[in-house]
Image (cartoon, rainbow, N blue to C red; front, side):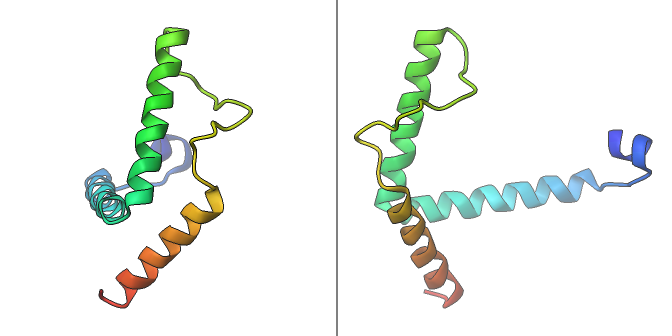
Length: 91
């Protein structure tokens, strides 16, 4: 409604909602097929939970230095790229 009211742009929220659900399902499938990604997400969730426990509220930032048990971001990107290539080839 805000876009429509301020800019005159009509947005179909039902379609956006359906696309969001499809994207979430796609992400869940990608993560389910990659053990490294599952491990990374579990660590992120654990760090988030620890931050909430310490701060008493959700943190809006990440620590300045990554934890030693966090995987190399380049390796994660490479894994995701491999997954996307396999998906595009229908494997």
